[in-house]
Amino acid sequence: MNHYQQKDISVIIPAFNAQDTILPLVNDLLREHTLSIEVIVVDDGSTDRTEDVLRTISDDRLIIIRQENLGVYAARNAALALHRGEWVIFLDADDQIAADFLQERLRTAREAQADVAIFNARHTDCDGHQRHPVHHRQPYGQTLTGQQWIRHCVSQREWPHYLWLQIVRSAYIRDNNLHFQEGKSHKDILWTIQLAAADGRFYFADRQDYFWVNNPASITHRPDYYDIRAASYTDVIVDILALSAQPQNRAVSRALVRHALVESRHFLGLYRRKVSNRPVVRTHFRSRIAFRHLVPGVSSLSDVFFLLKLARNIYLPAGRQTPTTVSPERR
Image (cartoon, rainbow, N blue to C red; front, side, top):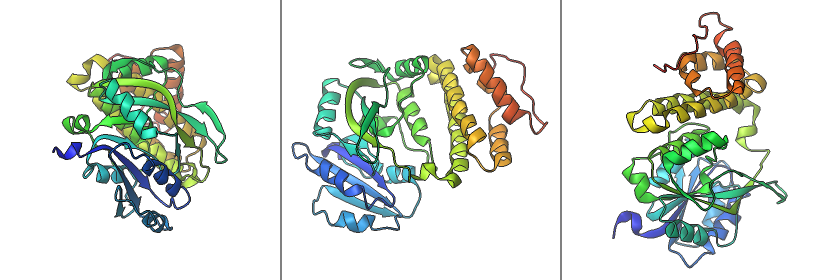
């Protein structure tokens, strides 16, 4: 039997200091007995009792990997290297799932003959109060190619890149040599773009089967993490622009540059309101991303005003680099 078909689904969960949340999630997954599954939890150097809590579960479908603190993306790569599922689902250790979560995702993906199925989720607070859905403008009930989906998301200004929305065929990951770029933050954006750029079959279901818990204690809300997030946005924008220049992505080249401009908005929001070391963050962005490479992403007057704001905040202050004349040229 093919290594990737030994299980129906591999569920991959990175965990760092998740002793208070990981047990309910894993138990909910292991309650599903109609499928052949494995739940791979990668303990990413926790300093609390995360591993001890997991060891209380006596179920050979649970696989625990312990690694030094390398980050969630390295943790996911470690699990991808040994998973045995025909399909892969990535979850976060502090969130919650609906009943029959795995069964319904697998049924939907197989019936649609998809390489990737994208579901919906609900924002949820720590007290369990469910709020609005994560996305609203996806092509529900339809199948698109990945590159058609990129164009759809860019035109709708809604990019649901969250990994826990996805169920992905393992063969699709393997055939396209997909893996996570290791780093601290925001690399899920790049994973999802690469997933779509490979141009497989994507199906969209408005089943709100995942509950994204807003955790104020999350590392992403720590003041000392904002500069790391800004640097990660810079890396992501650089890689999106590089993808836009690849010949196989010619049909979505402009859409990708438009998306790079959207991520630049997120970067600038962090830069203006959150980061502590602005000179370092500004220099990093300016040294890696030329102003002229973002210009082809302009599609509205709002984009023009944003680029002027970006120029004033990032490209002008040091007096060494000024924005070039607006031109469709990227290189």
